Image 1 (cartoon, rainbow, N blue to C red):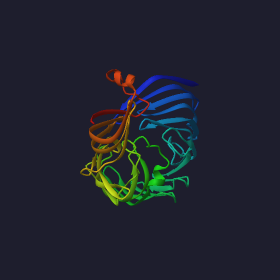
Image 2: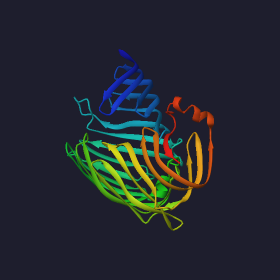
Image 3: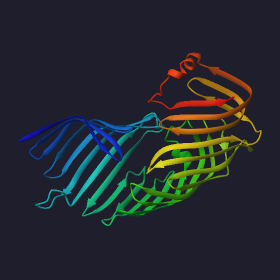
Image 4: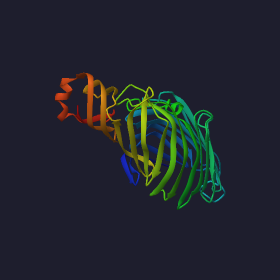
Length: 364
């Protein structure tokens, strides 16, 4: 006997959003197979998914292609998922132990500067879970049957931290020994439209309490000797001695920092990142020149480019792939170029879902 199921634009709603599924499933005897399945949730989708799974031995495999977006830039990779080494006690449906292997052999896309692969292995036995990744990620840890989590992250290159604590009904997690080389870490990812990181070391600690649906995240971190280029406003490298970061009430506050250009203090900057549970929601930021100081500036949007020695007072707001820039720019030795047709069509233009969009309200 067999049963076929055709899913056509099935939508499942949850607190995390809507998941859309379409495809064909076949259940024959005690074997489940998928010839083609599409799944989409938010900015992430799985396509061309195929799978075979035995409900008798609780083993099988699945493969397909993964696509996601960060700041409207793509991340793609084929994937393979395997379930094996299952032990199913007589008279039971679910196994007492099993192993899961996930392989992402080629993670690339517009958001990825350096292609890399990733393997994740999970072993379950009577309520206890152990996991580890490939060496390039350097993550390993466990979750005990009483919901105690231990994670060690050390990829022998640019990232170290430890996480431990309870993951039960009430969260009580500690994040310690944070040590990130930001230049190496951001070297894998393309944030160049917004900023380019040239140096800095992130250290500190954080904690998570509350529940998974309403987490309370607190922490104190800092960036030692940050170096970066704010691509939005200038090609010049900005440097600072130290940037403190405070996390509370699910807000990440990058505290006021004085940035120098070629050893001369030029700019004040601070920002707040607002979280929705564990996900990014939106960001507010301020960039302001120190008194009458000017620096070589370049503001580039889809419609115009301004180059000038500038004194600025800008408010930035980023949400859903749209960057709002408001404020004042005072410039000397200024050049201005614009696409007249695009400016003329400004009122009729709709945001482009596939790229970062800008909205500006500036006194120049």
